[in-house]
Length: 305
Image (spheres, one colour):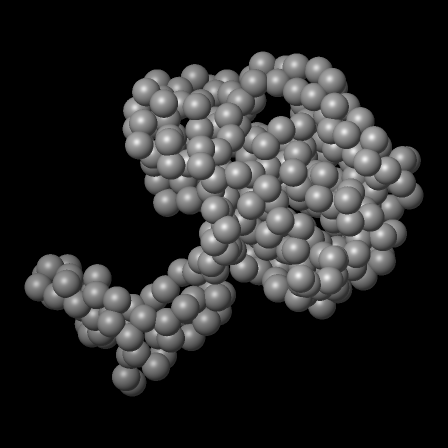
């Protein structure tokens, strides 16, 4: 049995912590000694139906009953002023911020032209703008103490899922946000990583009438199996930075982007590419791409003078 990670003295903000993965993450951090601001707006998964602070408070009550320290926050993530409210609340309660887990969000399905403006804006606001704003408000405090851990909850859906364009677009945006923040924070003790979770939560409910087999499979995976990996990435023990992990059902695997060797011709024309598209598409000599600079630097080597 590995030695338990110790979060004594650390303060964590966990958004969307009233249910599912967020709840188990908040409970796990508190059990290991962290003081936790349990944030949840208590509303529906479509991000548009507000609820009450009771959802967050129920998790706080559970933490306190177990001897932990926590406070409830019912602020809806998204706008900059909401992020400021959340961070200020954590500072007022606990005096510092060390960890941000951007877990809040939801989704509404519909074809690209059929989603309402409110549905698109609600999803992108909670799933992408919310994490960005919360990171911005917490960042100065992390810089000052030269330490921080940020975990952004992404989704395999960022690869594209029919009828979920807004959700997929927002989750895909977290890749650029995570990698950029990781690069900025590296020299200051701030690590930023992403998780692609697979777990049975209420966000899977829309699968019931679309793909029963997938729904049944997803519901077998427990949220805590994802939460435990997020807790590690939020710890001092983790030196990982700027990476993404697919997590669920007891499996943890790094996710990355690969670039193939490609078709090379300095004077390439559309007709040349038409004749060689299979070469361009092949993943021969593929390498893991970890930065924009790395990918750009491949071109002088690939293209002779």
